[in-house]
Image (cartoon, rainbow, N blue to C red):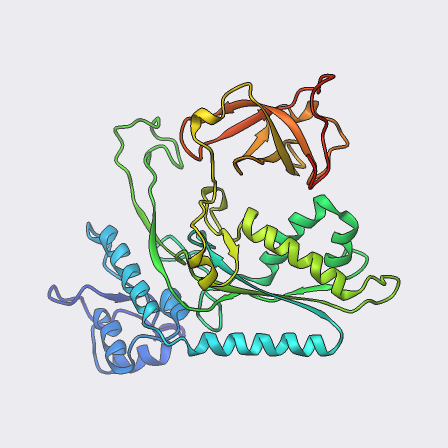
Length: 397
């Protein structure tokens, strides 16, 4: 003992000692093992032999993850350790998740009995989901496990932010009613979202210019070898449950909770389908489809960025788009091409009319289009001529 702390080096490491180390061993277990004069390198093996690996995946990932020493095998060890953890998640007991959902449903029913309008939506991932990649971790890539249950989850605060980003550009008054302002509280409560089954898989992020990022030691030339970085993710086709409740009318706000609940349900579906949740959304991660796993399996698979073949769209074509949202800093409109569903931007948004609103449909010209399926597409607004179609509101053309 040194100043009340434990010295994790009871003896010199022998060469034949196994190479597994424990990143974190509880203090009482460490003291007990030191009394037995066990080398540090055998602590992890001895604890697992006595008690088995933790059933809590979050605890296993954050505190019990074994690592090889920093040598040439470290890169392969990361992927192997994460794959073992993914396999363990598939074999884990799902009763904990069933109990979590039962308790959340009971909480919703309690709010319903008090006059609240409840929203409970099932949604299926159409792409992988990952979040909190930047969390500090020995493997350099984090993952979002619930701090108590140790299962993947999405915090209600993040879901609230995604839904508010959908509602606010379309109806500021509704956004203030649901989400509140600095002067008054909002009427909506979002619960944490959980999957129905705990499944994980290993994905890879592969920087190709490792000597260019992040310090820029060399230019980004093609002679630099790629550097695969493994990380955990939730696979596609996993069903999740999203819950929210709209509190009864109070004070001067007399709009019924049922009416607000219906509008909230619509905004939630739009946020899950068009915006996504978690990290790497611009790369296609975290996109959901409203419905259960059975309905999603029966429906034809839809890519996150559907598109027409490249010859169908060319520079100068006049097309109809729907305004989605305007970037408050850059002033650029994000739009959706109605015929193909492709998402793009209006490059000269500063020249567009100032009375445009989200949901409005306008005619624009194709400014540039990638030859690759699902590639980038940009548009340019030009004032309509005498014979050009006029802009319409949402649901009209």
